Image 1 (cartoon, rainbow, N blue to C red):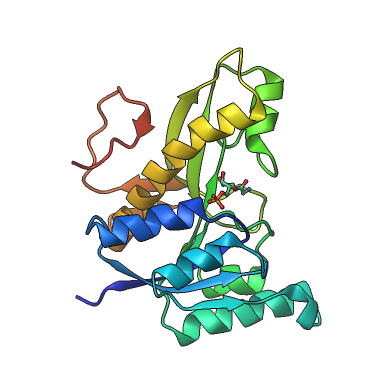
Image 2: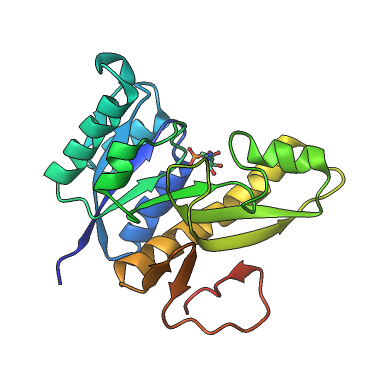
Length: 218
Ligand code: GAR
C-alpha cells in the first residue's frame, strides 16, 4: 500500500512537528512527511525540517491578493505533492474555505484544551484563569469554525492550584506529543470514520477508564 503523505503547517517552535518526525523515525508512524509549510520565516520548525531532510516552503499571506487566495495557494502546493493528510501543528491562522474544501476531513489540528472549552488563542491560560481542575488537549478535524470540527482524540491533564500558564502549558504539551501521532496513525490505517460531528474509531474498545480517550492502541 502507498504510504500516506503528510503536509505539516506550523508557525513557530514546532515541537509537535518534532513529535511527528520522531514517530516516523522510530517506526511508530508508517507515513511520509512530504512537506512543511510555514507562514513565519523565523519559525524554528524550519530548522527541524532542515535537520531531517524535509522539504519546506515559507508562504506568507502578504504576497496574495486575499486570504482565500493564500489558502488556495497552500492547497495547490499540497495537492501537487499528493499530500493525503494536512496536519496543523501550532499553525496560528484560521484556515479558510479553499483549503478546507480541498482536504475535506483531511485536515487535523491540535488544540491545548479540552474542546469545546477554551477555543482560540491561549487555551492553557484561559483554562488556568477560569480555575478548572482538569484541562488537556484535543486533536480534531478542521472545519470553518474556530476549533469546532469533529473531535478525534483527547487527553485530560490535571491543573494544580500553583500552576501558571507556563507550567500548565508544559504539562499539556507532553500529552500533545503523545496524542497527535496516535491520531495520525489511526488516520493512516484507515481507522477513522466521520459521521456528522462524531468520529468513530474502528477497533478501539471503550473501557470506561483512562485519561486518553480513545485508549491508545497497544
Ligand atoms: C501547541 O501547544 C499547540 O497546541 C498550540 O500551539 C502550540 C504550538 O507548539 N496551538 C494552538 O493554540 C492552536 N490554536 P509547537 O509549535 O511547539 O508545536
